[in-house]
Length: 189
Image (cartoon, rainbow, N blue to C red; front, side, top):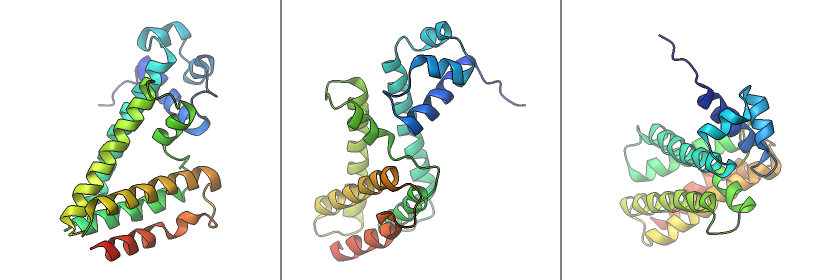
């Protein structure tokens, strides 16, 4: 049996797509309401402010990231292979036309105020990724797990920024992402 898409779902899906493709500040509630086919009154009933909708999108993006991470790495027999699988999948994604960068980086860029709820949600996500990289670096036998985790984190975020800057171009620096990650891991372990 097919589940019915609720007005809240339609609003959220339209907002998520628009935020990711065009940015948070560039997308107004009128556009979200129009794109979703749902009225502004209904939007405000479900999300009292645009900021609430942004935070909901970031929380969903956090969950999606970790679900995909687990799916990508589930068959990897070692921590080293988990990292390599993640970076290969990330390379494929950032070189695809579906990638518009990282929603968390985009949030921090548009809302640099550290007290802003969206900035805090973005920072919390990034801390969780850094912690996972550190754990995997330790399990992989890195001599300096924190240094490797930091390098991999910067490599990941650089790939996301590259995707936003260059799109799916084969001239993007991200074309060597997986190989660069492998070199970092091999040199550290």
